[in-house]
Image 1 (cartoon, rainbow, N blue to C red):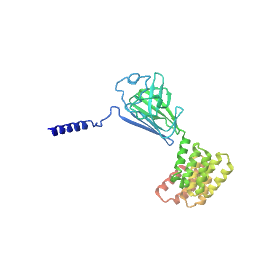
Image 2 (tube, rainbow, N blue to C red):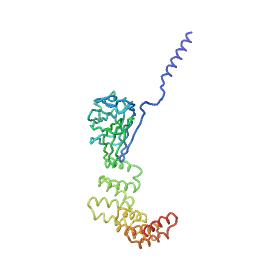
Image 3 (cartoon, rainbow, N blue to C red):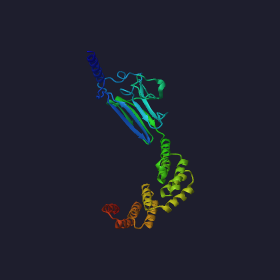
Image 4 (cartoon, rainbow, N blue to C red):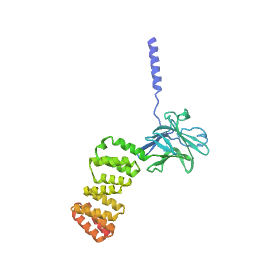
Length: 344
């Protein structure tokens, strides 16, 4: 009898234990995420999406003057892979609990160091990393389910916005792209890219274009040239020293670059000059290329393009005819024939 009682007790305990295992079912407020990259900085918002469902939202479902979870269920979180500025105030890289404090006129957007809580029930202001004040906007179109978006992305900024019912709550995020990308490039140049002249040159060229430190860019260009002087890295260094005020050295570097340029270098350079509307310079480069590479279909084709841009139809057709005679595929012949038709 005692053994039967113990067995029944064990079965009851096992049944109770199994009964406590929860099922995975659809959530009333489904999970969602949205992400954006600015420069090399990744940002992401993870949240849950409650529905309006015929309810009064602002001042009722979401009370005014109380900290709100900016979503449903556990913390809404926002993650930045690098340091950013929010509404002009600095915020380090990391993952933050995103809360909001709505009022009738303005909202406070709160970035909490605690990102693992359930909603805002245990929110503690002492854990704030940043607070910013923003102005909500009334919209004409209603949003049934709460939505976060990254709007108006540029090379250096975006606007994160909460949208629900007929309200949009935006906050601007800025990234110091020159600083963050330069730091990333330094890290990348500790790896495999450091073993090729292309890696160092790409870093130098990016820094030059994007407002990075010119002295650092010059160091990268010099390392690229030390490994292998090329048309590309010599011209990169020329552009850097010219921007630093040394026009004489820049001129000498460009001359050195032309002295070692191959057919592909000259083709690319000439095409780039045409794109910049520097027709006379493009014509000089194309003439140089056909002189050095008289059996190059591309060189004669580019010379035809340069003469066409100059308005010299006769010279353009002569160059295109030489290119056509060197063409080896139907696609090449069609491209050249189409260019000739435009000139005629």
